[in-house]
Length: 322
Ligand SMILES: Cc1cc2nc3c(=O)[nH]c(=O)nc-3n(C[C@H](O)[C@H](O)[C@H](O)COP(=O)(O)OP(=O)(O)OC[C@H]3O[C@@H](n4cnc5c(N)ncnc54)[C@H](O)[C@@H]3O)c2cc1C
Image (cartoon, rainbow, N blue to C red; front, side, top):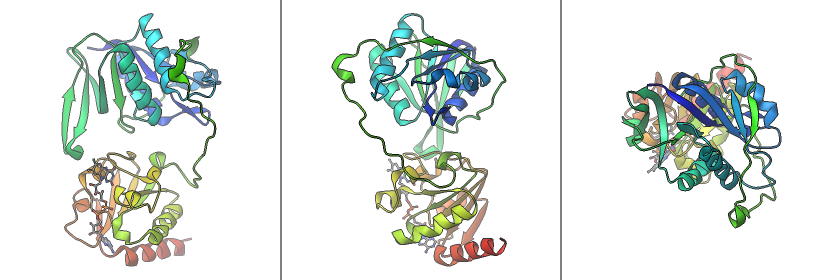
């Protein structure tokens, strides 16, 4: 049974909607007759064409947040808009802001949240979700039974982002009501992490390193190979926790979900919490000196060998090809 209306949180970064929001909008089109978005910022109108192209007919625009973090004002604005006639479901990307807003909205509406959603379909009684559990080895299904709207937090790469060629969305104001002292915190500075090459969760090639690299300095092998392949460098949690690389590099259950054409795992054992973040990659190459390492169970190409020998040779061979 398809539902009538779904709202999707459309996060905007660097002037464009983030890919995960576009993935959710694309899937919402298949599930509901009407797809609308909630956005904020000083330039919502500039993304109306892109959101429309993916199937959004209306944007509920919270407007400029005047230096606030989005959590409080956007959740309050959505709650107010819901009171005036809400959707059947609201989908949030599992980003920092998406999770923050969903949690605050849950409290405001006194409705539970289904988190870590990796699949969303329609069943006899409305929307049905899939959730990967036990590190992705099992999938459970769930659905809301009470009154709506259902709040869903969905993992990146659960669906494909596909435009449908719609007209630009109309923009309606959905300002936040006065939230008093709860909205007192203001952003006073922003630090953008330096990055060369594609974003980890959007790269076509990801080369990740794990504890098998032995020491922090060896991570340059990962960065060099990633750069030669015009890809992004990722990491297991073990080396993030060890302080070798920042958390933004982490792939897995508590890091990023990636789905590149090629994923190269170097010195990574293949713990279920890592696999859940990369096992849907199209082609997986694993380099590990232990032939029984679990990573080989998902690898399309396995190299049993020492990363300190294999990676320099691989880098040399790619350079030789020019
Ligand atoms: C709640 C929870 C959430 C978690 N979330 C994540 C997550 O998001 N992402 C994540 O990655 N992990 C996560 N983990 C941690 C996870 O369980 C593993 O501990 C972690 O993935 C292991 O990292 P690793 O493979 O780099 O290290 P190890 O498990 O220590 O594996 C190192 C591998 O390197 C190989 N090796 C050693 N030397 C060499 C060499 N010279 N050449 C080639 N191979 C070599 C070894 O054979 C071994 O297979 C989570 C854990 C928990 C409990």
